[in-house]
Every structure is written in structure tokens, then in C-alpha cells.
Length: 165
Image 1 (cartoon, rainbow, N blue to C red):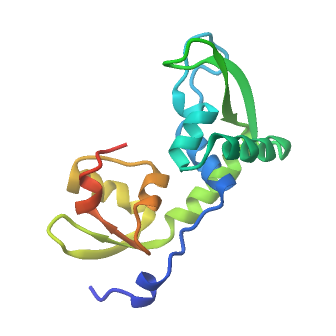
Image 2 (tube, rainbow, N blue to C red):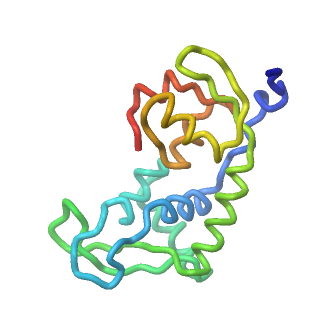
């Protein structure tokens, strides 16, 4: 297959912090929304920051903007590994809709995926996880795949050494 050189030349998958927060919360929903059990660290301010590669204060600002827009809500809950309650976040129905729209847009973007044997193939981002599951026996969150891109190239050899999500 002839690869599109323009596709390799520019990264069309750059996301704003608020978009990354929405995608992260979509892929890490707050389980047991009304329960009293401990929740996953990923939905805390620190967990969001770690997952999307920003400082917790920046995550707090982004979540505040999303909350004012009616896309995110928070609750105080016990988080796995923490001794006291922390603020944890979840998408509102409107937030789920917005995050799904962003994710669908991303999944249509074309990337070039280099397999473990070095062979490159072009595919849509939405097809990458099925390929990765066969190729490296792991699946990855959408943001992890995007962050692992070099331009629009995803090299399975580099990703395989980092472990699945």
C-alpha cells in the first residue's frame, strides 16, 4: 500500500486539554455513581492530570471550565489508595455526548501503524486497538495511542515495551 506522505508530515491529532479531559473521563467512567465504595484513582484530579500529562492545578482549571459548561460534575468520594475523600469527576449526559462526538472525530483520522515486523500500514485511529490487540496482545486508551504518535506514525515496537492500558 502506498502511504500518503502528507499524512506522515503533519499531526492532525492534537487535542486541547479540555478535550483530553473529556476523552479520559469518557474512557474512565465513575463507577458506582451513587454508592459508597472506593472509586478509581483515574477519576480524581491527580488521576486525570497523570493520565493526560499535565499538572494537577491545570487539570483543576480545565475541569472547572467543563463544569461551568455543564459537561462535568464532581462528587466527594473515597479514592483507591487514599485515606480521605477527594473530589472525583464524571461526565454529565451532555458531557458524554460531547466526548463521544470528539472521539468519533478522532477515530476517523488516518494514522500509519508500523507493526512489530516493521511493516507500515495506513488505518483509521478507531481501528488501531483491534490491530494492537492482535499485534502486541494489549489494548490502549485513545489518549495513550495519540500521545504515542510521532507525527501520524504509531510504532508498535515502541508501544509494546510500555505495556497495555
